[in-house]
Image (cartoon, rainbow, N blue to C red; front, side, top):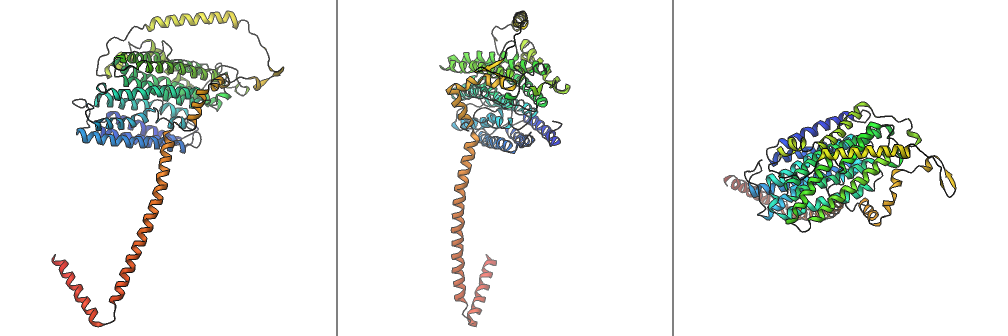
Length: 538
């Protein structure tokens, strides 16, 4: 950020955001929580204003979506206060959905939660911001802080204020939102050609797992969602910051312009690969364990719903798509042929490399020692219920087997392909291609995905703004403004005409009273005096 315009203002908004976040967590009731929640809206607007390029449209879009959602959330809190008479934490007894207005209150507060988490359909400000703001902003908001705060309120709302385990329709709403978010955003990420925009869609997709886990109402899935929130902060920060290191050295985030940087930036490459495999749910990393807990919770819902297997398929297929777009990222940035312009690229600065390396090691440690460290000391103590059996999974044994497999693969590769390299020319139609013409970029390697008609139409549909709540909101506001303008113009015109008629009538009346005769004026003076006396007496 040292070369970014308005750097001092940026750090001011970072401090303000952290202060407001602490205020949210320390609030003793929903009213004070709402006050600090709204401070976050303005600090978000300020921090998004500090961009690589002109970022005001993205900031306006973010404050519009989140501001409207927070207004709906405020109305939900008012309804809750009217119906229960209490908004303090903790409530003596959890609120049951015995009244339609309580269901409305929950859903309205949920709007503020989903906007902060970045779940469908209130997510579109995140990919828009990814185009214009630096990687450090995306790692902070929405990659880390918004997930923490959004999940915090989702948990408090669903299990400490209300009790959604007694009301299946609300559970189904959450699970449907989670499943749709996972699949649609993973598909959108798979089709991106910009690193930060791809990671932004990935951030939204991972929020779907948290919503899905909470929606099951099963303790192990709820704990898995909380663990996934923590894991998401770790590996998503590592991915954004690693991408920022690459951009710092290459001055671009376009995947078509990158490639072959693994040997030039080995530490960044290592951290990026570990974080990418972790978010994809590859064992024994931390992302696998949290997703595995959510899978178990979904399976346990089979007694409550007959469509549980659909949610399980969405969650598992989402992990496959996540692995696919992360392999695309790794190939596009670090593997393949390197452009000649980047032959002098070197590893990022020390203060940029160390954080991502520590985060990558955190992905490994929180995966191998999941039960011994994060679950035991962070996740389970923060929950008010027992989990029971976690199922069978031996991360230590799995880690050893994976290491053996990797070593065996390296040996086979070294004594096979690596020892006998063969260079050939690339040609098309008998004509030899040299230089950049022969370089196959990562997006080109995955271009066959665009030929899948359903995926291409889904992408075109989404890029056209069909999934963008902001477009519908702006269209409705524009229509209302045009209608209001015409109505107000007519009202003002008619009011002007009525006032003109009244003035004319009063003028005509007073003209009649001015006869020029003295006794008429004396009479009006006495009549005025009588009226004044009556007013004083009354």
